Length: 75
Image (cartoon, rainbow, N blue to C red):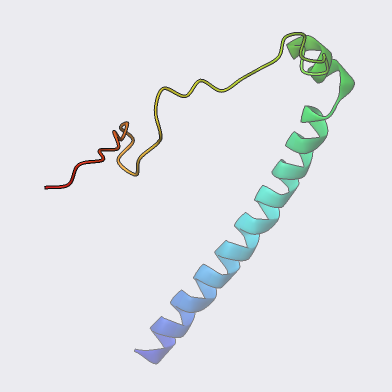
């Protein structure tokens, strides 16, 4: 029983190491591609914003995602 548990633990450990190395190389390649001048130019990401950007807020945010109306009277 212990041999089976040890084998399972080693397999998961080896698999996790392999996947981490794989994802590290993929992320490195994606970051390099994302920062390439041609990629930025094709998508227009290197251009400055021409108009001021302002967030639109209708009411104060709430934890539920709806607007909260403050009431001064208490019941």
